[in-house]
Amino acid sequence: MAFSASIGAPTAVQLGITRLVALREVQAAAEWFRAHEPELRDWQLQVAAIPAPPFGEGPRAEWMRARFAELGLEEVQVDAVGNVLAARPGTDRHQKLVAITAHLDTVFAAGTALNVRREGDRLYGAGISDNGAGIVGLLALASALRAAGIGHSAGLLFIANVGEEGEGDLRGMRHIFCESAWKDRIGPTVVLDGAAIDTVVTQALGSRRFQVTIQGPGGHSWSDFGAPNPIVVLSHAIARFSRTELPAEPKISANVGVISGGTSVNSIPESASMKVDIRSASQEEMDRLEHALREAVAEAAAEYPKRARNGSRGISSEIQLIGFRPAAELDPGARILQVIRAVDAHLGNRARLHRASTDANIPLSLGREAISIGAGGSGGGAHTLQEWYDPAERDLGLKRVLLAVLALAGVQK
Ligand SMILES: [Zn+2]
Image (cartoon, helix red, strand yellow):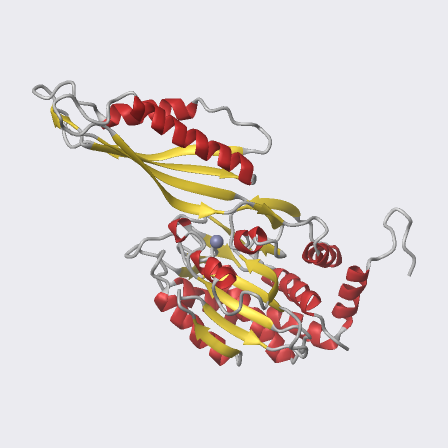
């Protein structure tokens, strides 16, 4: 085969993909995805119908545990924080494991009518794609590997994790990579989140969330007039903070998302609070903005005495960290990136590198190789009750996952 000079000779990783797709077993696994779409759809409808609000993933985790066991995976377990893990051993026990993970939780509060259903070829319901598609991706991969009898050199670790969304604050992944017995055994990590296969998340968007509370003596609006007012102090703090200069590059955002306080129009409030969200891919910029927030609150509070003249309590302030997701970036030379690029080239799939907050934030922040990709098909309306999923061409996305995982784990032939 001739390669033109502009394209260049194939790399070792590209040759590895070419060898992989030539294997009869790999072709059989790819074929399995196509032939078993009705089963995948049924799993997706089943799992999406089980509520999994933040901190309430238990019933869905139990469903997942049963599926992992049925599929013949080993060491099936629910860990201390509720993650479901299962292993598919490799032939080389000394090699680091390849982790494939999808989050179980949804953004929808307990009691939300999820309204999961099928209409024609499309699936509907809250959480059907995010992350019904990713969860089904884990099951499809385990099923196809089993049906095709594929062996791999590194072991695979399947993880259905908890706490990806919102105030879950990535607690499932944090536990796996910081505390669990698996933490040093995991090599590269492939995160399956949602459907779309036109992006590869390699940059972890970091975030920090704060609750700021200002407290004062409170009182009657007429008879206690003059006592410091926490709502006014908080407003001053917001005005100061909002004047902080933000660079265009690296991008950073700050949002006061919730504000509350006070009891009635003729009472001086005893407290006022706000929730602030700061996001960036740069840890340094987030440090700077956090510092600006702390300074704005301290300066606003300092305009009032700590103790009022009549001896009653003055103004006090408290800043509580309520969310923390580290920012990080995959090394552009990382093998996992070469692998997904080579797989995409083989499949003729165009994907751009993307920055987002995903399960990959945790391994990336620890300097590990990780990407987050979709599990195939298409979806929309994530985080709304109108969410939908269309399984057309899901098999292409799953073949992409299969090839990437096998290239990372190695298949000896
Ligand atoms: Zn998701």
